[in-house]
Length: 419
Ligand code: HMG
Image (cartoon, rainbow, N blue to C red):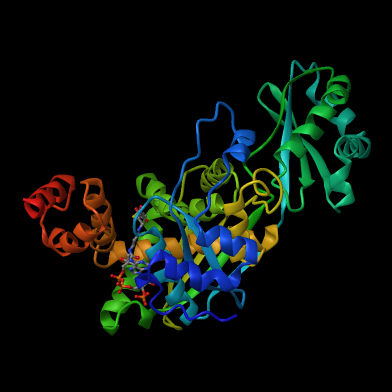
C-alpha cells in the first residue's frame, strides 16, 4: 500500500505507528502499537548477568528510492537531527532519481596465524597442494551452509613478518557468519600445523571484510541545494571541497566517516546486526590505501549540474542468525524494510550512509551544522533540564532565540517559567 508521507515529522508517535501499520503483519502491528519490548526471558538468553533491558528511540526514515524500489528505513539512535537529516536527504535524492547500489561480493574472510614455521616457503607449498582437501574439511565442519548453497570458497597464504597466515573465504549466505567461520578455521588448525610444521597462534574471522564490499551512488540536481542558483552552485563546489578535505586530513576524515556511521549504525542496530563488526570493517577499509580517508566522495558534475556522491565500504550484514530471530523489535524493522535479503540490505544501508553524509556536508558547507542540529538538540536540553512535554513546547522557541543554547540556559528558562 502506498503511504502519504507528507507531514510525517509533525505527527505524534501514535499517528506514525498507525500510518506504518499497513507495512506490517498483524502480530508486528500489535507489537509496535503497544510499544512492546524485548521480553526479559529472551534478553536473559542473549547476554550474561542480566539486570533488565535498555531502550533507545526506534524511528523511521521513510521513502528512500534505491535501485528504483522504495524503502522505509528503521533507525535506532539517541542523537537528535540524525533521522531528520536522513529523511531530508532521502527527499532530495529521490527527486533527483534515487540511489543506485552495487554489491561487489558477499564473502567473509577468516585467518589462521601460524608461527614457529621452520620453512615458510615449503609450508606454503605444502598447504596449497592440499587446498581442495582443506576446503572440503572446512565445509565438513559446517555442512548446513553447504546445503544452503554457501560454504568455503578459497584459501590462500601470506607471509607477514614472523607469521605465515592462512586466509579462508566463505560464502555465508544470509548469516554474518562469525560462528561459521570460526568453526571452520578451528577445524583446519591440526592439518595446517602438520603441513607447516608450525604452531597456530589463533584461528578467527577477520572484520576487515574486503570481500563484502558494497557501493551506493547518487546524483543530486544542484538546483535542489538552494532556491538561489548562485548559492546552489557555491554549495555544490563546497561539498566537493569538503569531500577532498576528508581525503587529505585525518582529523576531518574521522568526523566525515562518523557522520556516515550516524546513519549506518542506526539501521545496523535496528536490524539486529553486529554494529562493532560493521564499524571495524568500515574504519579499517577507510585506511586501505595506507592513510585514513573519508569513505565517500562528492564531485560536482558541471556539465549536468549535479553533485555526484559515491560511498564504498564493507557491509557484512545478516538477515538471519545471531539475535535477529530473537528480538521482536528487530523483526519489525526487517518487515518495515520489506524483508530484504543480505545483499539488498547491504545496498540500503550504504544508501542511508551516503544520504546522512550528504545532509551533514550540505549543512556544514551551508548554514553550519548548529542551525539544524541545535534546533533539534534544544528539545533534548529542555528534557534533560526536567521540562515536561507542555513546558518543552512553551520553552523551545525561547531557547532557540538564546545566544548560549546549553544545559544551563535550559535550566534557567525552566526555572523562570515555573517561578
Ligand atoms: P531544514 O532545512 O531546517 O529543515 O533542515 P526543514 O524544517 O525545512 O525540513 C526539511 C525536511 O527535513 C523535512 O521535510 C523532513 O524531511 C526533514 P518535511 O517533512 O517538513 O516536508 N526534517 C525532519 N524530519 C523529522 N523530524 C524533524 C525534521 N526536521 C526536518 N524534526 C535538518 C533541518 C536537520 C534536516 C538539516 O539542518 C540537516 O540535515 N542538518 C544536518 C544534521 C546532521 O547531520 N546531524 C547529525 C548530527 S551532527 C554529526 O554528528 C555529524 C557531523 O559531524 C558529520 C560531519 O561532520 O560530516 C556533522
